[in-house]
Structures are given as C-alpha cells and as structure tokens.
Amino acid sequence: MPNLLGVTPTDISALVGSVAALGTAASGLVDSTKVLRGGISNVGFGWIKKGLHPVEAALVSVLGNEWEIALRGPWINGAAQSDQIAAAKSLIHVGLSPESAPTIATNLLLDVPMFETVVASLKAGTAFTTAQQVEYNKFDSVLTAKLTCAFERADQSYRNASKALAGLFAVVLAAVGGGLVYASKSGFSLTFFASKEFLLSVVAGAVAVPLAPVAKDLTSSLAAAVKAAQGVGAYVRPV
Image (cartoon, rainbow, N blue to C red):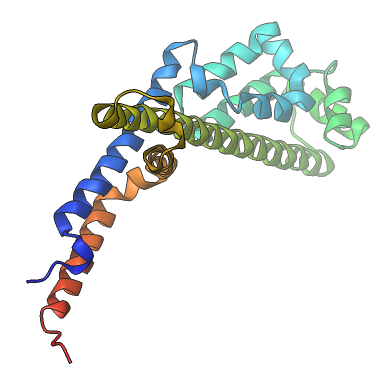
C-alpha cells in the first residue's frame, strides 16, 4: 500500500501526542504557580473587588477590613461561582445598616429614603409594605447582576491569563527541546535561533496549549483520514 505524502497514521499520532503532551506539561507548570500564595489564581479577583465596591460598606460592617481576605480564599480555591456569589450576598445582607444604607442606595441607584426604610424594617424584623418589597426586590436584582458580572469577568481574566502563561511556558519548553535536538546534530550554536528548527519549536509551543484538550479525538480523526486516503491511493492507476 502506498504511503500518501510519506505520512503514516503512526507519524500523525506521535506528532499530535507530543505536542499535546507539551501543552499538558505547560498547563501543569501554570498550575504549580498556585503554591506561591495562590499564584495565577489571584488573577481576576480585581474584578470581584470592583463589583463589590458599591456595597463595601456592608462588608466592612461585618468583617472589617478583612472582608477581602474572606472572599479571596474561595476564589483562589476555585469554589463554585454560584456558591461564592451566594456567600457574598449573605454577608452583604447581614451588613446592611442604617449607617451604610444611604451610601449603598446611592451607589446602586436606588431610592435612598425608601431603601433606608427597607433596612430599618429588616433590622426591626417587621413586614415589608408593598413599596418596600418592590424596593428590596430591586436591590436584590441589581446586586445579583453586579456580582454575576464581576465574577464572570474575573473568571474570564483568570482563564485568559492561564492560557497566555501556559502558552509562554509551552514555547519556552519547545524552544529548549528544539535547541537540544539541534545541538545534538550540529553542536550548540546561536544559529539555532535563525534555523527552521527554532521556528518549528515556536509553532509547536504556540499550538500545544489549545491542542491538548482535544488531542485524543484529533489524533483518531487524522489517523482515520490518512488511512482512508492511503486506501484510495492504492486503487489509483497510472494513465
């Protein structure tokens, strides 16, 4: 059976598997940075702080200046987003007070006098009037929207930063590996950085991270495609 373009399924599997392994190794290095006071996991928390700024007075009244530490822990540990939002909302509700109500209402574009009566009713344990219930529902909806947006932006920043750092690690690892192969053939020389081997190393590192999660399926698909092409080539007759 002819070997179409000199490529065999084994070659493809080995190439894709190697590049995917490089991506996995780079992702592992990114994950290892978490031992340094959270490392890459700290990325994105700034969006959460920004989202909580309008209601910071309520958090300070409950946890003092350590409120940020209390919320940063679950973020670094990768707790479920819904659980983190629920915990933040609980703390904010507990921290509502007559002193913080005007500031919070102003920051969330609520009716200040009405929201003050809402907080007073909460503290007194009395039932809401219809108007107070409407204002409370508005407060809860606005708060949920702001927290959801903040956590989504934070998660996006974390994922993007992780991929970028993993890509950098992958390129460096690929360049080192390519340099060692080049040195074994031609001896160590700075000409490696002007060679096609260096370019291939950079390309391999660049595609390694996005390729890693789909490597298994891609390998199987490509191998099947090459086998099919080779099967067709076997029946081609010269004219």
